[in-house]
Length: 98
Image (cartoon, rainbow, N blue to C red; front, side):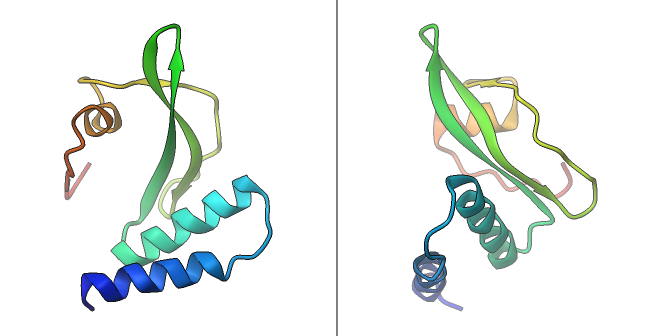
């Protein structure tokens, strides 16, 4: 499937979601993203500023292999974590066995 077709499929999926809470929409978005990429797990982070420092907060978490529950924590944007590194650099990382 071409990239353009995948983008169109994703946009059509989002349009069909109708009215729902932000949390439910983010969960649907993450599930569809994982389905389209074949990922067994995923997290959506929201970037925010805390005391002058950029931080990431997880707002949707899914894992097919390990039971996960939402907890409140922040990750610094920058080196030291995969998510922080990606947020800081904009690089796409493919890690086959995290």
